Structures are given as C-alpha cells and as structure tokens.
Length: 72
Image (tube, rainbow, N blue to C red; front, top):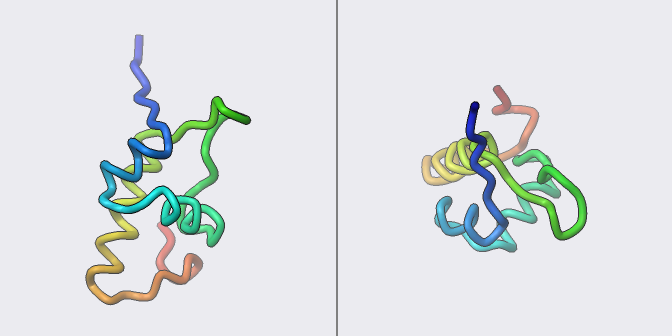
C-alpha cells in the first residue's frame, strides 16, 4: 500500500516557510495547483510542497514568478 501524505493549508505554509495567504495567492496566480478535494476536505500533497519550495527558491534568486515562463 502506498501512503500519500496530505497537508492542510497551515501545514503546507509552515513547511514552505510562507503564510497561508501566500499559498492562496500562488494558487490564484497559477504558481501552485489548486488543492485536492472540496470544501473543508481540501488538502495539498507532496507535489504541492515540492512546487511551493521551487517557487520560493526562484523568488529567492530574484527570478520572475510568471507561471508560463518557468513551468516544468
């Protein structure tokens, strides 16, 4: 059985070193995929955390965060 880690927005934000508001902003701007699930069951997975850390690293390098220019 494969265990899939799920994060609430607060935990994802803490692990990524950003605020919950920043996570929501990144989702709104297309820098992070939308959370999985619906309503209060929304959650984020390991791919969200990896992408959040990538966005943060690019930001720390003063790189543009325009989604289409730095995707995959």
